[in-house]
Image 1 (tube, helix red, strand yellow):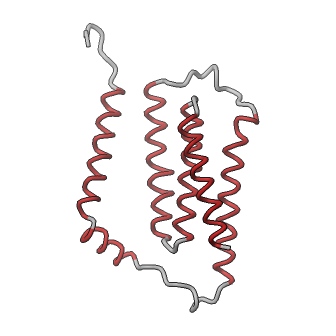
Image 2 (spheres, rainbow, N blue to C red):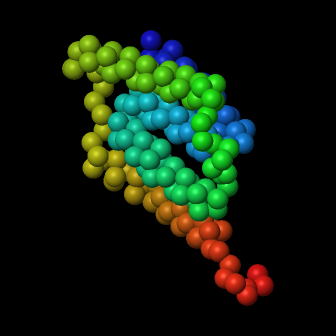
Length: 168
């Protein structure tokens, strides 16, 4: 059953990512990307990595998407008169993909709750994850932090409005 749920969630994540790339409306693209990231978080939970699943939801689907939304609003890419009342067909793909992800999460949680606690594999403690992450993959963590810093500087540069009289 877990393998079937994994393939369902993987297809939801891929479809959500494709819809996020091909969507012309930036806010809709963010919603598809959040749906895709939530599916990846459920996959992490399925693979006995609840800490990674929580990070996926909190950091990526939460904080990074809010940053993207802030940049979109700052650049004024959306015209408010065009997006006042979206039709139900525009919500259908995101609702369908989100429903599949939530149903898969419920199935995994219910299946894990029904298993014998001794037979289920134990999750890795947070301390061991941190030690492994910073000892063996410290350079990768630093590179990701630099990428986020560069993205922030780029967003600030793009959002900077030229002053009157500037010839830039």
